[in-house]
Length: 155
Image 1 (cartoon, rainbow, N blue to C red):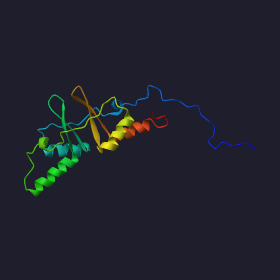
Image 2 (cartoon, helix red, strand yellow):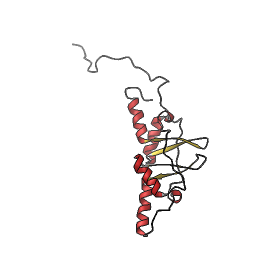
Image 3 (cartoon, one colour):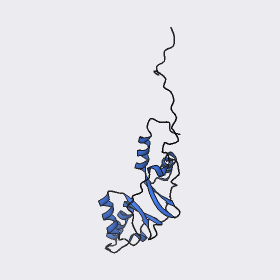
Image 4 (spheres, rainbow, N blue to C red):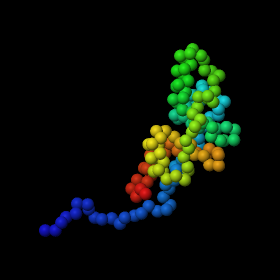
């Protein structure tokens, strides 16, 4: 009596070809909703609700990244304005956005980006090339990439 294999018939191993998109730039969003530092908090909140996003990059007139504004930043401003009984109609996001923004390289491997998401506890990373904002990668984009690569060797 011989040894039976419970693995089934062996298939030829197929290596992921070099054409398989594995870079962040292959999965990043390029059609971004951006904000400007002189925009009011109310207009940013309206855009966040309208476009169903959790925040976005803040750019100057040269499309250079100057910060990121999030739902949390807006909620903090709502709370402070209520606490101090100060209306927030004319307040701009310039003083309320995060300015030390961590970016990610568009040539980075998508799985290294996934690891960076885990370590940094961020929901999104802007991608900057030559000082200009070119896109953004989110955790959902990484999930889409993983699903697109399902069934291939992850290297």
